[in-house]
Length: 211
Image (cartoon, rainbow, N blue to C red; front, side, top):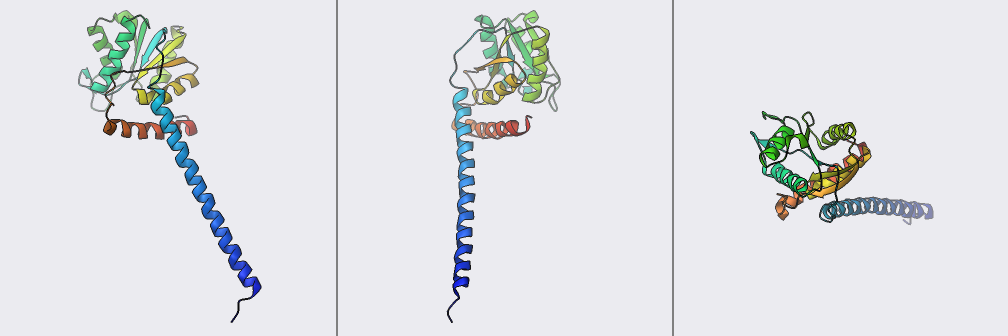
């Protein structure tokens, strides 16, 4: 029994609609993957290409502490900030970070004690000890920047962290520039890839929700 022309047309229309839907879905997935790949690439190169500049202060983003000592990641951030201070690129260091779960001391205080032990004047160090996230680090630090009327600011952290951090800082009204740690602990592919994936995710979250 032959199918009617209407039946054939309807079948062809349904197939065309399905094919068109598949193309749209694949196009959306492709665009999303390209956006993710492009963002991840820009995050990677952002913190690895910079020109050192002089500024009024350096905001050192907090990281974990081990007892009364900075973790290896935090220590390298502090060491870089100390080098900026000793070479005259900044006059003031601003350490950020509150008390983590199970910790006794705030990250910022540990950072200050470590820097003082390396010869930085206590009077040249400011701290905020209540933040728990990068956004809070920068929000609290921006209040210190305003109080002390600093103009130009360096943001010190690991290279892969800086694209999001600097964007946050600028959205808070800071004249901020990146200053990546040259001795970052995230140097191998096994350590960089998870960090890069995490930063790419949180970069999109920040763009969408500003958190």
